[in-house]
Image (cartoon, rainbow, N blue to C red):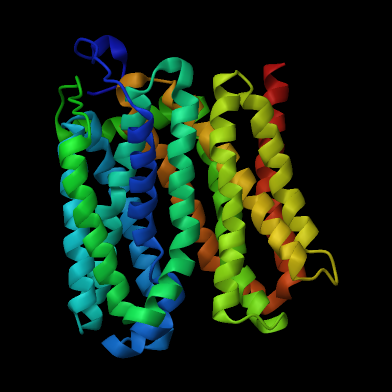
Length: 400
């Protein structure tokens, strides 16, 4: 049975160096790959009628992509603790390129939905790159390196929607998928040449490896706590970014282009990632976590004030994105420190909780808004990070 214990691992791996240029490249790669999950979100209404998919089932495109990603996190990402990492990254990125190309070519609704699932499944290369970077970075600067790379990931999430809206105006929705496929092919080519090799020291079967993922979750309370905090925050993040565009278009007269600008402004929150990394390296992880868990519900309550205009929605977007990113990087720094030999599997547990939270948030967003409107919905969303704050303070009190 593979436990992830360094004592049962083979001789220690020798980390390679990680230059500033490589960190920037990895940040770009993470953003570009994770964007594959969100390109379709603002354009499903254009895609559905052209492939013969009913409006009622159009949201399945996004749901299946997210489900495929969660499945990949559990079943594919742990392979990074068993197989050579560069080969996995190149293989998954090439597979993503092929599935994106096929999605752009197909006219069958069932085949497009299957390809949506596969796009999510093959886009997990990003979650191999992050722990690989943590392995390659020196201990003293690991938080900063992970923070810089995670800022690229969050920018990919935030910018994918406005970018998709802009590309569809010029190239049509199929052009969005062709462009993404070409970008994945270029990234695969560059990573095959430039990415350092990393051969894990674990020797185990795949079944034992997957079993050890659940064993790690049971073994480390910090992993469970951090996963729960970030899952609740990401659920609120997903709820906000699903509801805010609807509110802006229905009650503030925003066009699709103005919503895209709103999303771009919200991306300012990505500056939290490098700040979080430096806080973690300086030993201020718990203080930073407290700031993030206070800021998230506060930002949502500000946006929920009766009579608040769209300016407060912009403020909420920036502050909420900042809080979510801050807590994510601080959590990753703490999780990666638990067991250097099991970082890919630790990351799989951590990130799966995040995207499950996001998927559940998206699932309840529309009915919540239709029943209660913006103000009460925003208050309800604020309960999620407030719950994370209460759990954090309770756990902190237990330590005292």
